[in-house]
Image (cartoon, rainbow, N blue to C red):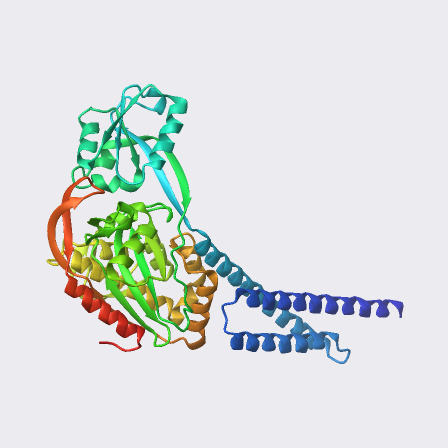
Length: 480
């Protein structure tokens, strides 16, 4: 008799443990889901009620003395399955929160200063410098000064020769007038025109990396009810998104959340406009990125005469990772062409990350050159937006979170991003995406960031008037 009685308390203990663990997991899941703040309140309430009812039923099943042991065993199996589902869901929630926090917390610019010599130079380190270092007096000189101070702590047996033009600056190194040059890496691409193989013909003997906080230039609105404008800038760099570089992709996106309309204005990279970071001198738009995203946004805002509420900043690495994480995107090409080792057909193409990058960077295959390239970039952007706002995102959700972490920067707040996600989940409505482009006339003119004359595009003011009218129409909930 005593042995039989001892089994019942043991079974009751197991029932209690199963019930307690299941209840604890359910509570943690609901708390995390609430803290995520991505679900509309109505959806959260429905999920909470369902979880509560299921937990109450299963726990009651375990605690009842009248339930057959087979049914209790079945209940434990169901508890285990549901617990696994909620644990998996909690992982989703945690990773979602972490990804968004990484995006909104990374508000720094990374400035890298390098000491560069020719590839066949005998100089191996800064200790070997003994003659002249070339320097370019363009842009923010403070980081060059910091690097020079660090170099002098190790070796001061050299002099500095200043240059005001990138062609002469590079020539001085190639001709042996200086034994090394010191360069803000954001300006490396300025050598492309006169020395396209510069990176292959030289090497870095020392690098210094500095970080600076970006200026807050956001103009905050209620993004779920008021129209707002986002500046998309794509820099010509790979690797860390915080590394500054030329702004080769420039798009102004006006979003009307009430009508689910997005209007994209493409701006040519060579647009010749006043730049706030160069004392309002005229220069190519792409050069604003060298001075930071705030320079790009403020210069375009002043030129167009509009408020730009937020920005999103991406680089080459970002695009590949995001597209691959989405399982590829569908892009409608106006032309059949080849680029980057890939062939694209006229019509719809399903592209992976590398193909999307090649598609969006090609310009030499078209008579329209850069105009076709920026139109193709908008087609890629449209493909990404369509995929992200479709139910297909669910199957690639975790890989998408991994991809976006550290691949772009934005000055939208976490609360604003959460509000947009909740709005989209609430109605799962598609977006109508239209686009237009600022146009101009090509020519040659002085470019301060280069220090010499280069190709520029003089703005066509009638195209500006046209797109401003289209922006007003989107904000008013109509189309011209």
